[in-house]
Image (cartoon, rainbow, N blue to C red; front, side):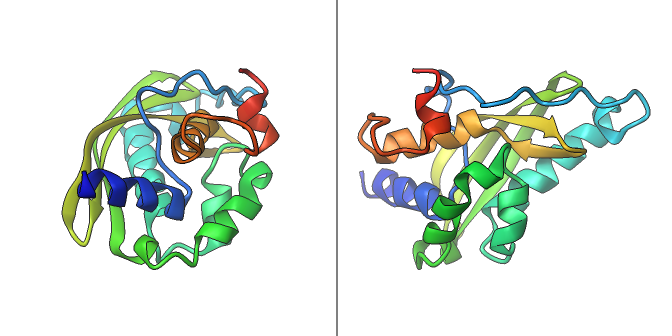
Length: 166
C-alpha cells in the first residue's frame, strides 16, 4: 500500500504518466499524422523518440517548459504541471519505459514503470504517446487518467480537457 500511495503522489507530482485503466479520457484535438519522411514514420526511430520523450517528461531534471511541451496539448495543463513541479517526491522518481508499440503514424502504446528512489513503485503500466507538432508526447488521455486517479475517480475540478469526453 505504501508503494502504491507513494507512486500515486509521484505521478501527480510529476504530472505525467498513463494508467491502463483510464483510457476514457480523450484528447481535445487529434494528433497530426506525420509526413512519411518524418522520424515518426520510421518504427525504430519512433520507438526511440517515444521512449526518450516519455522518460524526459518524468525527469525532475527536465525544465517545466519542456515537460509542458512533452504533453499532448500541454498548454492546457501548464498550471497543473507547474504547481506539481516543486514536490519533493518528484525529485526522487523516474520512469523506465520497457516497451513501445507504434500503433499508427500518430499513436503508440507505452509500457512503463515508475521508480521512486530507484525502487519500483508501479510496474507494467500502460500509457499512450501521440505524435503532435513534430514530437512524440505523453498523451493527454494518460495525464487525465492520472489526475482522475489522484482526484479519487472524479473529474470535477480537473482541467476541462479531462471532463470533455466523460
